[in-house]
Image 1 (tube, rainbow, N blue to C red):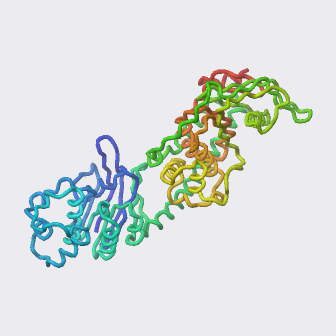
Image 2 (cartoon, rainbow, N blue to C red):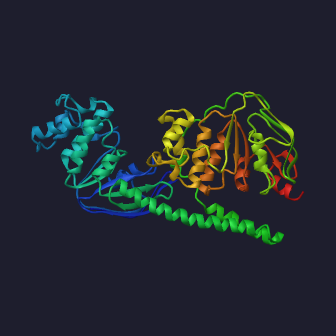
Image 3 (cartoon, helix red, strand yellow):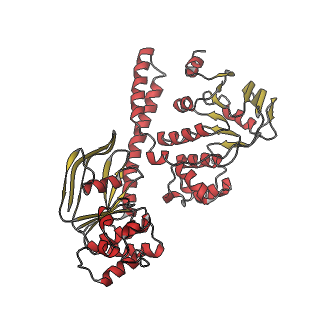
Length: 486
């Protein structure tokens, strides 16, 4: 039995666990999951009294044994004169039991009379695993026990653990092991410093977490709607009330979630934009009418190599029309657009016309970017598409998910100019932050239209064109405020 109540643990100044409580009954098989660095291995060390928490009460009934992910210093192993002595110190085991175990962990080629301290790191870890399994402690703690084993060895260990008669607490990235031989999951949440309990195996835990996440997203969505309502209100009140509302909006936004560490940790290198001249795109004196309605009049716009330009203005002033003219989808009534011969434009619109709804996400990314699976997967993960989702059909995605996928596909290619027409429309705050961070790392030019002021401000364009005023100027922190006063 393992009982943990109100556990708090800091490593240096970093809090790993905050008031954590959980209970494990005798004979239970528990999977310990969470992102790298969340505190899984630390928890095992705390249970073994190798680490001491700042607060909390831990009660353990019975003997306990641990096998770390990698054996570096094992005092018993270092003191043993032979492998035989290390595995069978009390001479209570039969030779056939030891031989069976040694074969199972793929160490049967070793001389049982040789000193264990002369073995390699991987061999030492497998030997420590064999010793722990032979000892059969009441509570067995294993950190990645199938590391250093081939497929056959993994299956043997999995089978052995499935029949282990006592309590097992296991850290493993082997999903088959977590799905077939576990009846409870403890999720170490590195963001909240809490431990969440789920009944059943890994897949069942994911389903339960998805339900919790859906509820959380609903709550966040309601909060976002409240923020949008308050932002609208600031346009209709006096200066004093506007300041009060803006402060309230700022406080509400601060409470919205940050990017999860597991998302931030995913690294991928954006392709280098194709080589292009210093002035890849220039539009002069652009005018366009629909019947008697003049939408654009005398618009001038230029985009330098690698520059970010924002296109700002209310609905109906011709922003999308101008973009279609720049993309050569429409001809202007007057004026001209000059494009460098080497210009390669990646275009995003809200219609998702370039997506094949019958393909899955992984196929789509690999085909669109002409890249391998090993390149496509981390890009999809960075855009909040985990491994469990990459085989989902594109047509089943929500609007926000299609937006994330569309922008991911643009960034997989070597476009030297991205034209993004309202990329934040479907996106929640979390998704906006993912897109924002990636766009900040992009080395090509960007022309962006967005009604989300915070997104534009954080992206930090170099210049902005405001319609219908045809005001084109360098961006500054108070740019939108200055424009509104014109």
